[in-house]
Length: 114
Image (cartoon, one colour):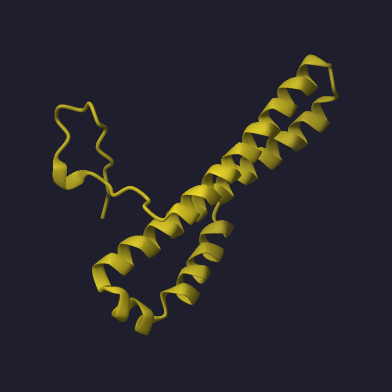
């Protein structure tokens, strides 16, 4: 099943296709902190290029940023899944199903895909 994210100014976007936003403040803060760290790494890479650092060192740092962004994407996906499953099942049912361990496994599996 494909999910389409509707853009705010998209005249042909169907309301039924709009994806929910991440509402958990702790998760949002975690994701923003991860992105800020990656942003700092990118600035460091720019500085390395300006200073004429060796390409191998720059490539290593680029790989680290890619891994950080991939990890952030996986975390966002799992947070979204947890939020949406909890909303659809209800808090009591979600607790009985033990979503936490299952979503940790999903995060581990998604982290290995690349």
